[in-house]
Image (cartoon, rainbow, N blue to C red; front, side, top):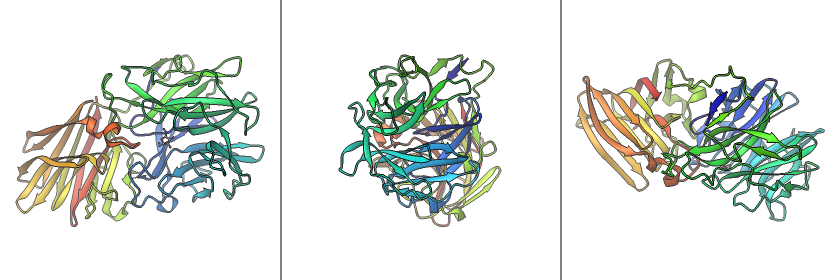
Length: 495
Ligand code: 6LW
């Protein structure tokens, strides 16, 4: 069969995977968005269904005023003795912690802190011991992948933190994951930074603490040498074995806007790449060490079909699984019905690294038509294409002393400008955004007539312009004390 990459589209970075019986579970990072750490399940590795989040209570994660691309960094998801563990870093507070649950569809525990620094924590269990890895520094300040043993009940360190591997010389050694496979301990990592030079490297050793010997042909996976290829930034992976005994890597990567256009605005997404162990115990990955947009494989049964969800609507999404808020949402400002959303605005605007009234869903593909009916009595409400507080395009209805207007406002760094405003004689309008790889165009429909307000280039919302680790969210928002806005007929239809 053939499957296409990415297998999970939209901003779902830093995937970590584990398998329980015949179900695979996946967790991703979530930064300043709440709830934190989205979870998916799959039976076949290519069709992934959102099932919830690990950090659903504000008491589990401190996101108050965290910087964009701060907050929740890369997670590791593991299953041990009937219990799921998810460990991650709050990069803003620089705290590593883990939570656990016996029911992955239910609530997770309160956080248990681990006093080892660095980011990208990993857990490995063996013989009653729990090993905790992260990319950081040992007690003498020596950097690398560091490891200690912890008491899994309390998170307390049982041994000093020790450097177990320093990588192959690439910058930003990160994303450690430890496994035991066929008698060897494998330490997987990422290097090169989560940009165009990203790569997956690994080493193996005779014990969980090493000594580790690098795979001689590292990097085992990278697209950094593929010019003119849409998929770039391939790295940060986790291994999983399927029912047939085959190995796979779920890892991140991104799709640039065009073959020769090195910008990406959809964020880092989840890719699937086959892994093959050789007789010498070293493994290779992908097509000659690269990840393709389409793999032909006989490891997944021919009858498995890769289903792509072609639209997101209020009716076919779930508020608590597909949508998310910024930082510390005030629940009283949101009211949900099956086909209607009511938002109450506050004085916090989208330009602040704070908690505006906002609920967003990831833009999952380049070509899309987003429509929504919006109505309000005062203030401003509409759709924002949101990268961060300094990079977002807002398309909204605004009420001022002269009546109602529809506005198209671009916010690109220090440049904030209302490109166009048209008067409408109602308190409601249908907003339409047409998205292509290169541009968004903004159209309002009033009294059966379409008025084109303008276009804006996607590249100014890209990571290359905005920086950071996130991707564009399609946000519905309300702004202004006393603003009460209703949203209905939301649809984001992908081509
Ligand atoms: C993450 C690190 C990385 O923790 O980016 O791609 C950081 N790699 O491993 C934020 O996602």
